Image 1 (cartoon, rainbow, N blue to C red):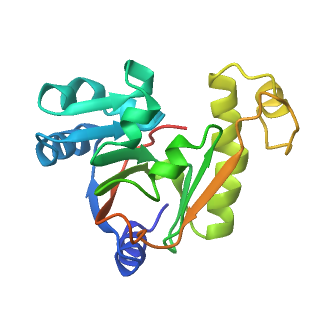
Image 2 (cartoon, rainbow, N blue to C red; image 1 turned 90 degrees about the vertical axis):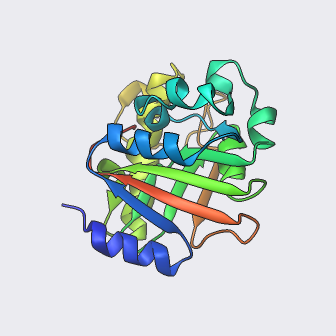
Image 3 (tube, rainbow, N blue to C red; image 1 turned 90 degrees about the horizontal axis):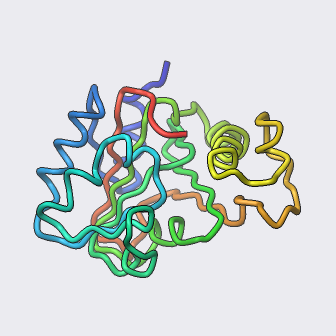
Amino acid sequence: MADIKKLRGNLEMRGFATSCFATAEEAAKYLDGRLDGTSIGIGGSMTAQQLGLDQLLPSHNSVYWHWLGGSSGQAAAADVYISSVNGIAETGELVNIDGTGNRVASTIYGHKSLYLIVGVNKIAPTFEKALWRARNIAAPRNAQRLGRKTPCAAKGDRCYDCESPDRICRALTVLWARPTAIEYAEVVIVEQELGL
């Protein structure tokens, strides 16, 4: 079982605000109340979709989500960015892998505020295990979901560090601390399994 108290303490020492909710519904309600009258970019996130943010936020914000009609460029120019992570360590490191680069770029630069949503299934005890999770659990599942022709999608068991043109693992970021160009960054922890 994840040590959420330890995780929150380590994230806060690294400059991140944290919040924690028992359910996805509570987290969605929190974000819906917190974000109002602003522009919001959302990265390719199954977690954000499971929270129903595509239904809640557009009624009182300008939301740009390339999955639902917005462009990556519009999302990159938004004041606020929302993403999930592929792995997070109780020691405070946040790991993301990306194919296009739009999501990982937006978690380090270009926005006034950043919200990273994390289900308990993404939490690992150490950085090494969070990185392992991102590469060997999240990435193969994402490749399968996208119908990619990669060894990890075909076998669904691990990263093969392939050279396939369909490879989705093209960029890796590790947030060791809140990037200085982002004024406010919050990790929203949900005590349910969410996303890949």
